[in-house]
Image 1 (cartoon, helix red, strand yellow):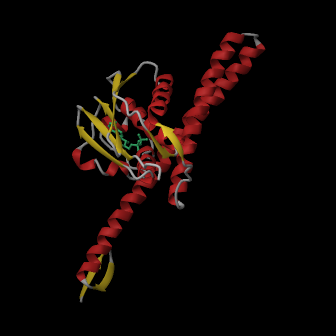
Image 2: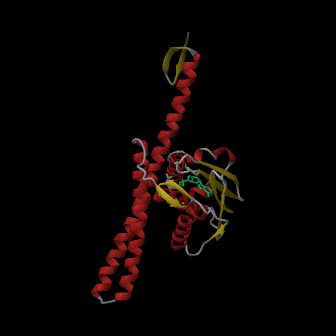
Image 3: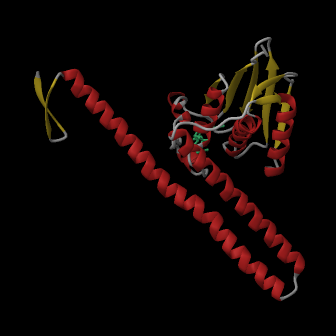
Length: 259
Ligand code: ADP
C-alpha cells in the first residue's frame, strides 16, 4: 500500500482507490461548480420576468388611472407573457427535483403522434411567430404513453432548435415509422455542438460554455428532462451536430403493441 498525499490529505490505500478518489473528487467539484453557476443564472432568469411583471403592472395601473384602455391591455399581455415564462421555469425546476427524488409521474394513454406533433408545432408557432417549422413525413400511428410529457419532449427540442439558431428562421422536423418504432428528427441550421460535448448536454444543469451559446439564456434543465421522458417510454435520444452548421436530435420511440 502506498501512502499518497492528495490535496493535503495522506491516503494509505491501494493506488486504484486513490485514483478513484481523485476522479470522484473532480466530478464532484465539477457538479458543485455547475450548481453554483446554475443558482446564479437561475436567480437572474427568475428576476428578469418578475421585474418585467412589476414594471408592466405599474404601467397598467397608470393607464387605468388615465382611462387608456388599449395601452393597459398591451401592458397586460406583456405581463401574461412574463408570467408564462416564470411558469415554464418553475415547472422545469419542479421536474428536475422530482427526477432527483425518484422520478416523474406518468399517465398511460393512447397517443396519436401526428395529432400531438401538429399541436406542438402550433404552440411553437404561437411562441415564435417569426420562425417556421417544416414538417416532413408523418408517423400515422399511435403509441401508449404520456401525451403531455411526450409533447414536452418535442416542444423542448423545437424551442432549442430555434433558440440556438439565432440567424436562421427555419427548423425542420422529419417523421417516419417502421413496424415497431417511430423516429422523429428535429433538425436546425444553428450554432451546433462540439463533438466532445454531445453526451454532456443531457446532464443536469450542463450548458455549453462557448461565448455564442453562453449569450443565449437557459439553465441546462431541458435536455435532462427530455432524456428522462424518452427513457421512460423505452426510447432513445441521440444528437448529431457540426459546429457552425447545425444539429439534429433523433428520438426513437418503440411502438408497444396492445397485447
Ligand atoms: P438550456 O437550453 O436551458 O441551457 P438544455 O438542457 O435544453 O438547456 O440544453 C443544454 C445545452 O445544450 C444548452 O445550454 C446548449 O448549449 C446545448 N444545446 C441544446 N440544444 C441545442 C441546439 N439545438 N443547438 C445547439 N446547442 C444546443
